Length: 481
Image 1: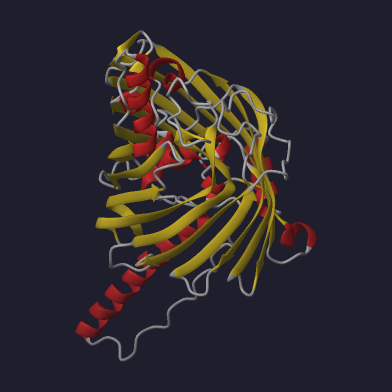
Image 2 (image 1 turned 180 degrees about the vertical axis):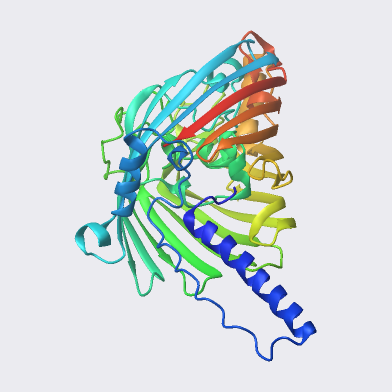
């Protein structure tokens, strides 16, 4: 996105003045009028960065009487008090178990506080945010698919999300974050993939499907601690440990959980841990193609259920099974992420141009619903001088059902005597265009197509048939103040 901040304006002004000064001196030298170049006037100092600079706000371009001035005053004094609204309509014109359109919205309120400005504590930041969520998810009601169509889809309620303090030490090389945390705020993330609206491009489908309560990710954060070490600008490592079941729902229905308001602060569940190393290159400077490579992994330390066999090693679907899944000790997985610019348009912004991202993950096949996942795609930004902050992209997800879970489906069909499909894999394609009206206000049309919804699960309306492929159209509005 184009930077309209005072700091960016100062940088553009400095470049213009330097060019003019050089051209004038060259002309005078050709004419023999000067023996020495004139002294360059001192450049004005760039404004100090505030805690609001990293979060675009409509207040920077639309003057809302009282509110705009009030927000600027708070930002200058170390407080970013913000609000954001996302409203959207998604409808499937074909496929799924029914066809219609559904509305959802999410209103967010949050605060970032620079405690050095407020209390004289260097390197300390405080953050809290919460959501009001309303509407119905088209994935839950129409499609029954794995890769949720919208990344704001969640049970309708008002709840606290994150609540943490972060301390930076040793010239910001080390940071420690403690409080109610969400893993999807930092781990397994792609900058380029953030353009897309499907939830899978944020918290990957494999983690949402395989972890208790879907893991510590939107909309349910959980107590934890995260440590990050960045010895150089290019390289960083981080690790975190969380309470392993954010809502207490286990592997059941997250909508019917024990943390309705997001403030249960559960500490008694088995832990969940993540670790990640990242290497970035060509992030600054007028040449080179920017990129980031990440490698990481996760481990859930609690017991998980075998997907196919009971405690006596009998097939769970068999009529003589005791119906109690065999307990297995924990589950882990590994992942990789790449963000890579393929072409850049702007000398002053290495993120403007054609970019590519990909993520891949795998986990154990006997104790997880999904055992392999990959997504990837392309985005294009800065391609139109009249609208330099618009972006468009196309991306794909692939989620594969584990052999054990697939085997359970085959067993169920065999022992019941009635054919029902066995799940295999689900593929989703998204095409989107994000139009920035002003900084902090975007409108985003979306098209998604789901192949094999639910990985080819049985259609409740016709159990011997799979859920039909679905074409989904949507429109999203996003406003941040």
